[in-house]
Image (cartoon, rainbow over all chains, first blue to last red; front, top):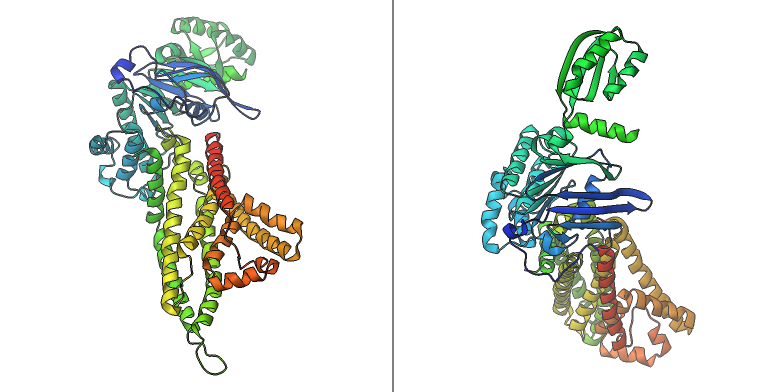
Length: 320
Length: 287
């Protein structure tokens, strides 16, 4: 069912709704397209007011998950709730904003007219349209192009417009599917600021992205999905607790390098070994082991694990 | 404004902004002007004695020519409706345009019915406006006005709505080009099947006759066209056709009887079924 609960009581005000009910909750949500499993038992919770990063390689099931949550696809099994209402509920959609990955708007309307259309469909009180449109145009930097036809816009400007449409009416939950795919570095910076602004006013943001540095900068919590299922999730601190240690070394045989695998996963690039998840306390022990094998250590460079390190590590672990 | 009316308004607005309405207006004025000039020539034709034709003869010739003109007009209207309806939903699904709209509190049924409604208004207004203009120009040129102009325009508009409904249904699942082509071929097959049915009537062959009956039930475009023909014919011609019995009913460009009320009832049911199927098809589609 793409649409449910057509006769529902009035929408609860955000302050009341925010009490305890997560922005997104799914239990074993899954989706099959014929024999292909697009999403296999997705279980997750996105708290209110948090920026949630949903990461994964291409084809992992990220967009499928968003479309299922928004009722654009029908689930195969499992359950899900948005703002406490079952998936597909029309009342919940009054409080949600959505920027699709495949963003496209009526090219024969002006930017202001597209936003007015979304105000009407949202639906927002007509008296508020003018202010809402002016505010979001200013937020996404399109004030000067308000009266221009969308058909004359660049892809980046259309993505900004889509972001503006998603922000109309101060939604309680905003889905952004690859929101910076068409934007230049300035635009990406602007989007990060917009996301931080949303979080500061208590809006939950569900951010689909494979731009890991971007996610790392704005997200409170992330889930990594691969082959349709979540392989890791948690706060950024929980996920990025490890240290990456790069060691420049000579004089080690392949057998010696194999013996170093008890210090965790090692990327071997001839004279440069990278230990992708090593407790910083074990660095002296590692150096001692290398020296004990006859290795000559030229450099040891520990650094905090980045999301990219962790992401690649998780995907490699999955493949094993 | 309810979402269904917002979508309907958007459909009309799109046709206007994309200059479809302007193109139709210019083409229609050109065709009407040209046909008025042509019809006026009938009044100047002389017989072997060098005299202009008597009014009855002018009316008879005009009525027959008008049937051909209206046939072409209704054909163009039906084909245009099919071509416009074919991509109505599929193109917006493929481009992603519907994604952000369907994430709003909008039911898919409202999208389907809204689009049908918007295009139906265009078809009906265009059929009424262009048809009335054509009839007025013929009346001015020859002094002949068909006996049932309102019924005529209603039948012609309904024929356009049939193709619109078929195109929209196909558009919920197929690409715009495929949906449009299938609807066009459907219209053509229905017309040919109607002619086969007429031949069956002339030959008193029930099997061939049933081809026409079944096609009129499955796709009522030709059945409605027969109603338009009847509305175009002067009473004297209808009397002649009735006197001719079976042969009078066998002419694919003539109708001795109007469509029965039961058939018009079936057409109403057909529209409801097509809309219901379109809604069901779109509701169950993965986007």
